[in-house]
Amino acid sequence: DAMVIQNPRYQVTQFGKPVTLSCSQTLNHNVMYWYQQKSSQAPKLLFHYYDKDFNNEADTPDNFQSRRPNTSFCFLDIRSPGLGDAAMYLCATSGLVKGNEQFFGPGTRLTVL
Amino acid sequence: DQQVKQNSPSLSVQEGRISILNCDYTNSMFDYFLWYKKYPAEGPTFLISISSIKDKNEDGRFTVFLNKSAKHLSLHIVPSQPGDSAVYFCAASAQTGFQKLVFGTGTRLLVSP
Image (cartoon, rainbow over the protein chains, first blue to last red):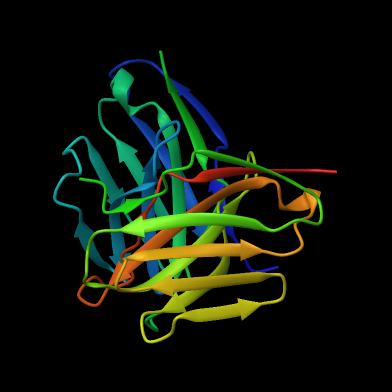
Protein backbone atom coordinates (compact mmCIF):
# COMPACT_ATOMS: atom_id res chain seq x y z
CA ASP A 1 0.00 0.00 0.00
CA ALA A 2 1.15 3.50 -0.77
CA MET A 3 1.96 5.24 2.45
CA VAL A 4 3.93 7.69 4.56
CA ILE A 5 6.43 6.13 6.94
CA GLN A 6 8.11 7.81 9.86
CA ASN A 7 11.10 6.52 11.79
CA PRO A 8 11.58 6.14 14.61
CA ARG A 9 8.13 6.14 16.16
CA TYR A 10 9.58 7.16 19.51
CA GLN A 11 12.77 9.13 20.00
CA VAL A 12 14.40 10.07 23.26
CA THR A 13 17.22 12.59 23.26
CA GLN A 14 19.08 14.66 25.78
CA PHE A 15 18.83 18.40 26.15
CA GLY A 16 21.05 19.97 23.50
CA LYS A 17 21.87 16.71 21.69
CA PRO A 18 21.08 16.90 17.96
CA VAL A 19 18.41 14.58 16.67
CA THR A 20 17.14 13.64 13.20
CA LEU A 21 13.68 12.38 12.40
CA SER A 22 12.99 10.57 9.16
CA CYS A 23 10.05 10.45 6.77
CA SER A 24 9.62 8.47 3.58
CA GLN A 25 6.73 8.15 1.16
CA THR A 26 5.69 5.76 -1.56
CA LEU A 27 2.97 8.06 -2.92
CA ASN A 28 5.36 9.91 -5.24
CA HIS A 29 3.92 13.22 -4.05
CA ASN A 30 5.68 16.46 -4.87
CA VAL A 31 4.98 18.17 -1.58
CA MET A 32 6.16 17.08 1.85
CA TYR A 33 5.38 18.78 5.14
CA TRP A 34 6.59 18.69 8.73
CA TYR A 35 4.23 19.52 11.56
CA GLN A 36 4.80 19.82 15.28
CA GLN A 37 1.96 18.87 17.59
CA LYS A 38 2.08 19.40 21.32
CA SER A 39 -0.41 17.85 23.69
CA SER A 40 -3.99 19.11 23.21
CA GLN A 41 -2.83 21.60 20.60
CA ALA A 42 -3.36 21.89 16.87
CA PRO A 43 -0.71 20.49 14.54
CA LYS A 44 1.52 23.41 13.60
CA LEU A 45 3.25 23.57 10.24
CA LEU A 46 7.02 23.99 10.53
CA PHE A 47 7.97 23.93 6.83
CA HIS A 48 7.21 22.24 3.56
CA TYR A 49 8.99 21.23 0.39
CA TYR A 50 7.53 21.71 -3.05
CA ASP A 51 9.85 19.31 -4.86
CA LYS A 52 13.24 20.67 -3.77
CA ASP A 53 11.93 24.14 -3.07
CA PHE A 54 12.06 24.67 0.69
CA ASN A 55 9.46 26.88 2.40
CA ASN A 56 9.97 27.82 6.02
CA GLU A 57 7.13 29.14 8.19
CA ALA A 58 7.94 32.56 9.59
CA ASP A 59 7.70 31.45 13.20
CA THR A 60 9.64 28.19 12.88
CA PRO A 61 12.68 28.42 15.18
CA ASP A 62 16.14 28.35 13.60
CA ASN A 63 16.82 25.27 15.70
CA PHE A 64 14.70 23.29 13.22
CA GLN A 65 16.03 22.43 9.80
CA SER A 66 15.05 20.06 7.07
CA ARG A 67 16.56 18.16 4.18
CA ARG A 68 14.94 16.48 1.21
CA PRO A 69 17.56 14.51 -0.71
CA ASN A 70 15.03 13.01 -3.13
CA THR A 71 11.28 12.77 -3.78
CA SER A 72 10.81 9.90 -1.35
CA PHE A 73 12.67 11.08 1.73
CA CYS A 74 12.55 14.09 4.01
CA PHE A 75 14.40 14.66 7.29
CA LEU A 76 13.77 16.95 10.22
CA ASP A 77 16.91 18.00 12.08
CA ILE A 78 16.69 19.57 15.52
CA ARG A 79 20.10 21.03 16.17
CA SER A 80 19.88 21.63 19.92
CA PRO A 81 16.67 20.25 21.36
CA GLY A 82 15.20 22.01 24.34
CA LEU A 83 12.57 20.75 26.75
CA GLY A 84 10.00 22.79 24.85
CA ASP A 85 10.67 20.79 21.70
CA ALA A 86 9.18 17.65 23.16
CA ALA A 87 6.21 16.93 20.93
CA MET A 88 4.75 14.70 18.25
CA TYR A 89 6.28 15.39 14.86
CA LEU A 90 4.09 14.60 11.90
CA CYS A 91 5.19 14.23 8.31
CA ALA A 92 2.65 14.63 5.53
CA THR A 93 2.60 14.59 1.73
CA SER A 94 0.27 15.88 -0.93
CA GLY A 95 -0.04 16.13 -4.67
CA LEU A 96 0.03 19.38 -6.61
CA VAL A 97 -3.67 19.78 -7.28
CA LYS A 98 -5.34 22.36 -5.06
CA GLY A 99 -7.69 20.58 -2.75
CA ASN A 100 -5.77 17.35 -2.62
CA GLU A 101 -5.76 16.21 0.93
CA GLN A 102 -2.56 15.67 2.85
CA PHE A 103 -1.57 12.14 3.78
CA PHE A 104 0.02 11.82 7.19
CA GLY A 105 2.51 9.43 8.65
CA PRO A 106 2.01 7.97 12.14
CA GLY A 107 4.28 10.53 13.73
CA THR A 108 7.42 10.45 15.86
CA ARG A 109 7.05 11.26 19.52
CA LEU A 110 10.12 13.12 20.73
CA THR A 111 11.06 13.17 24.39
CA VAL A 112 13.79 15.52 25.59
CA LEU A 113 15.46 14.66 28.90
CA ASP B 1 -4.08 33.94 17.14
CA GLN B 2 -6.08 30.78 16.60
CA GLN B 3 -7.58 31.07 13.12
CA VAL B 4 -9.42 27.74 13.33
CA LYS B 5 -11.23 26.96 16.54
CA GLN B 6 -12.86 23.83 17.85
CA ASN B 7 -14.38 24.97 21.09
CA SER B 8 -15.53 21.58 22.30
CA PRO B 9 -12.57 19.48 23.43
CA SER B 10 -14.77 16.42 23.80
CA LEU B 11 -18.15 14.99 22.83
CA SER B 12 -19.92 11.85 23.98
CA VAL B 13 -22.80 10.25 22.08
CA GLN B 14 -24.56 6.94 22.07
CA GLU B 15 -24.23 4.47 19.24
CA GLY B 16 -26.81 5.08 16.54
CA ARG B 17 -27.32 8.74 17.40
CA ILE B 18 -26.03 11.76 15.52
CA SER B 19 -22.63 13.27 16.32
CA ILE B 20 -22.18 16.94 15.50
CA LEU B 21 -18.70 18.41 15.64
CA ASN B 22 -18.28 22.14 15.22
CA CYS B 23 -15.54 24.36 13.89
CA ASP B 24 -15.24 28.14 13.58
CA TYR B 25 -12.74 30.14 11.60
CA THR B 26 -11.73 33.76 11.48
CA ASN B 27 -9.82 34.12 8.22
CA SER B 28 -12.16 35.06 5.36
CA MET B 29 -9.45 34.02 2.88
CA PHE B 30 -9.98 30.34 3.72
CA ASP B 31 -11.62 28.65 0.75
CA TYR B 32 -11.22 24.96 1.44
CA PHE B 33 -12.02 23.02 4.57
CA LEU B 34 -11.19 19.50 5.62
CA TRP B 35 -11.91 17.14 8.47
CA TYR B 36 -9.33 14.67 9.66
CA LYS B 37 -9.78 11.78 12.04
CA LYS B 38 -7.02 10.60 14.35
CA TYR B 39 -6.78 7.38 16.31
CA PRO B 40 -4.21 7.02 19.11
CA ALA B 41 -0.70 6.21 17.89
CA GLU B 42 -1.67 6.96 14.28
CA GLY B 43 -1.39 9.99 12.08
CA PRO B 44 -4.48 11.96 11.06
CA THR B 45 -6.42 10.48 8.16
CA PHE B 46 -8.51 12.49 5.74
CA LEU B 47 -12.24 12.15 6.22
CA ILE B 48 -14.15 14.67 4.13
CA SER B 49 -13.70 18.13 2.63
CA ILE B 50 -15.72 21.02 1.31
CA SER B 51 -14.96 23.92 -0.99
CA SER B 52 -16.23 27.40 -0.17
CA ILE B 53 -18.41 27.33 -3.30
CA LYS B 54 -20.57 24.68 -1.65
CA ASP B 55 -22.54 24.61 1.56
CA LYS B 56 -22.82 20.85 1.97
CA ASN B 57 -20.85 17.76 1.09
CA GLU B 58 -21.90 14.25 1.90
CA ASP B 59 -19.99 10.98 1.95
CA GLY B 60 -21.84 8.03 3.40
CA ARG B 61 -22.48 8.60 7.08
CA PHE B 62 -20.46 11.82 7.06
CA THR B 63 -21.77 15.23 6.02
CA VAL B 64 -19.99 18.54 6.30
CA PHE B 65 -21.94 21.79 6.32
CA LEU B 66 -20.41 25.18 5.65
CA ASN B 67 -21.94 28.51 6.68
CA LYS B 68 -19.67 31.15 5.17
CA SER B 69 -21.51 34.12 6.61
CA ALA B 70 -21.06 32.72 10.10
CA LYS B 71 -17.58 31.37 9.34
CA HIS B 72 -18.72 28.06 10.75
CA LEU B 73 -18.60 24.48 9.62
CA SER B 74 -19.86 21.31 11.17
CA LEU B 75 -19.37 17.60 10.68
CA HIS B 76 -22.37 15.34 11.12
CA ILE B 77 -21.96 11.62 11.63
CA VAL B 78 -25.15 9.60 11.30
CA PRO B 79 -25.49 7.01 12.69
CA SER B 80 -22.54 7.14 15.03
CA GLN B 81 -20.63 3.92 15.62
CA PRO B 82 -18.16 2.95 18.36
CA GLY B 83 -15.42 2.79 15.71
CA ASP B 84 -15.94 6.51 15.13
CA SER B 85 -14.40 7.21 18.54
CA ALA B 86 -11.33 9.29 17.74
CA VAL B 87 -10.05 12.86 17.73
CA TYR B 88 -11.46 14.94 14.88
CA PHE B 89 -9.51 17.88 13.53
CA CYS B 90 -10.94 20.64 11.42
CA ALA B 91 -8.49 22.24 8.97
CA ALA B 92 -8.66 25.11 6.49
CA SER B 93 -6.58 26.44 3.63
CA ALA B 94 -6.49 29.79 1.86
CA GLN B 95 -6.25 30.69 -1.83
CA THR B 96 -2.82 32.19 -1.40
CA GLY B 97 -1.39 29.41 0.74
CA PHE B 98 -0.45 26.50 -1.40
CA GLN B 99 -1.86 23.47 0.39
CA LYS B 100 -1.04 25.09 3.71
CA LEU B 101 -3.47 23.77 6.27
CA VAL B 102 -4.35 25.52 9.51
CA PHE B 103 -5.69 23.07 12.05
CA GLY B 104 -8.01 23.38 14.99
CA THR B 105 -7.15 21.83 18.33
CA GLY B 106 -9.41 18.84 17.80
CA THR B 107 -12.51 17.35 19.40
CA ARG B 108 -12.36 13.94 21.04
CA LEU B 109 -15.48 11.95 20.13
CA LEU B 110 -16.52 9.00 22.24
CA VAL B 111 -19.31 6.81 20.91
CA SER B 112 -20.59 4.40 23.51
CA PRO B 113 -22.48 1.19 22.69
